[in-house]
Length: 127
Ligand code: HEM
Image 1: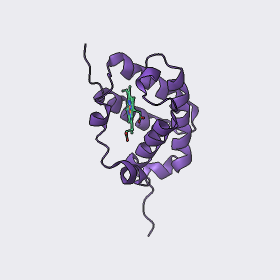
Image 2: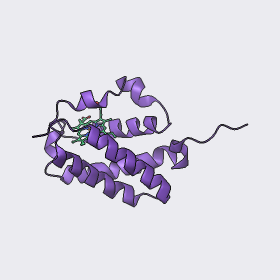
Image 3: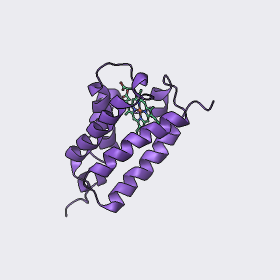
Image 4: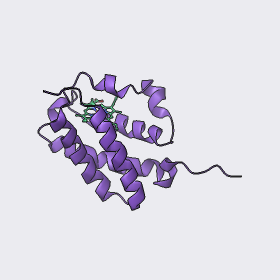
């Protein structure tokens, strides 16, 4: 009996997450609110970390945790001031990335609901 496909596999595996995250960071690079938050001049490290995290989250290889340990995403975002405007800017970039990749409506909605929830949970500045 074959094991059921993970969501990671259903959406096309690593290639799909690579496409989404690369497009997302193209937008971040041009975003006046988000770009200054990223400590490194080169965004490729941040791009790789987000890609590996998402692959792991959706049932793909656990490489993120092998390299970085437990995600603890709220803690890792604590050094950055993330208010509602930053959350909305992050989601704007992700919306563009999601809309361009080939997915079914159900798959896109599932990813989007997750991103909305996750981005909101990263807000750490309310003033
Ligand atoms: C790292 C900003 C939401 C996942 C980072 C970094 C910044 C940042 C500045 C450091 C870059 C680096 O790793 O070099 C933001 C902002 C958000 C947001 C402004 C707005 C709400 C999210 C969400 C997720 C996420 C929703 C997951 C779905 C990650 C991951 C890392 C990261 C996996 C790397 C953590 C590590 O291993 O060090 N983010 N982020 N972020 N972010 Fe976000």
